[in-house]
Image 1 (cartoon, rainbow, N blue to C red):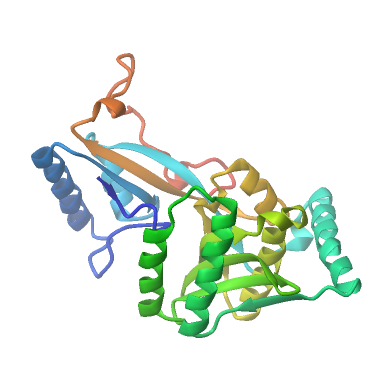
Image 2 (image 1 turned 180 degrees about the vertical axis):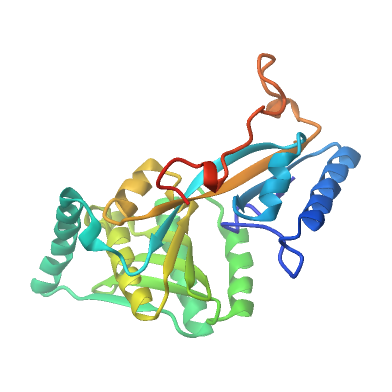
Length: 280
């Protein structure tokens, strides 16, 4: 029984007591009791490692926890701090799009500002995603997110998009709170992949967010794929954050660890303080 996935990048208790150790410990115990009563495996995914609930899970022997690094881009992007090779790669990619403009092609970036624009742009984003992943059933996701976006509105979510002439070649659904923006679902046009439109959109987006006063762009688990990491982040200086996934309950046979391994690892995931240098 997975909680939250795949519709949220991070999950966790919210409210006045969300960081209270006793409260989150009680919540952890409650989930364990549910697992015992139903005989299910309960999986909670993508909990920020700095949260009290994360510590509660790693302290409990019932949970098998795995850490995951997440990408966080400080804004404005510090291009001058990049290595020479990275700056060169960034200039090359930027030049490709400058050449398109110079040849008479129309390149336009836009960020939605109203609910109507948001829902319309989301339909386009789904079309892009469907072109790249034609075998995925998107009906449930479309219905769910359309309803979410209609209710959250433009003061919580937006879609940034990049057009080449009249074709949307990249789009990115983002949520935001305060000065931090969270990229939730990117999509690119497969026929224009040679132009790296995802990178071009990210460049426009970081400039736009910096101008608007944002201080961080959290790309979260959009970086799980090594290829995705190279194409989207190679020209950006980012820091690694941690989230973790915890699993408990009466293990299903497919979840049973090998006999040579203990059911619960002896070492819990590294907290940010124990993470490799360069992580926070």
